Length: 238
Image 1 (cartoon, rainbow, N blue to C red):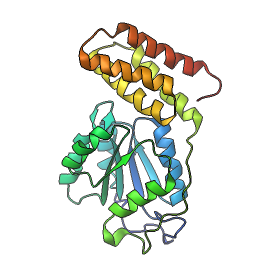
Image 2: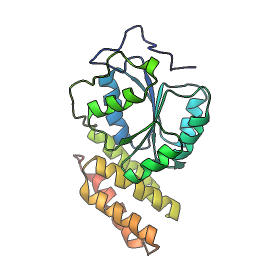
Image 3: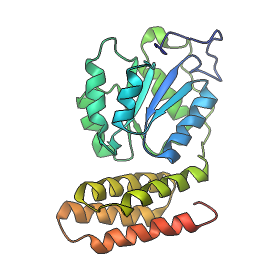
């Protein structure tokens, strides 16, 4: 099924809902980050679908073809660059292929494999989101006016952050091999930054640095796991 037919809805895009008629597939493992995008799509008129890993995204793309795809660069089963490279070569091509990350160092890698653009996380500004999507749509898919609505700060549901903590607690409860620790550090560093959780972001950064240097990480991994557990025990999410 092709979700990408121009303006599938009978209604036409407006200045307040400039993405009406677009279907956006979000390939993102963080529920907190995805909830921010869900709210932005809701305000913009776009439909949203979600995949939380490369495998899920590929399965989705066998059935549906969105008009826009947003791909997080760090996923549990590989790099988002892999999927972007595949989509760049696919025919017919998705209208706009955009990479996302809180790590600006990944932008070059995304652009080199064919991404049309790069969204810097955390995604909080509605006008930034709309402008980035609109400017990278093919000309025949853009509304007549590219002016974004007045800016608005989007705040995801705090419970989505708790969901992310539960997810990574499950990951850390398993075998703490190198791949697991690398993924946990990358995931937590990004989502903690998004949620302005400096304590957890700093701990995840130290874990990532220790892994990169090849130094012992047992104590750091335990510290990170303890902070995650503390977040889960809080009644009010950060």
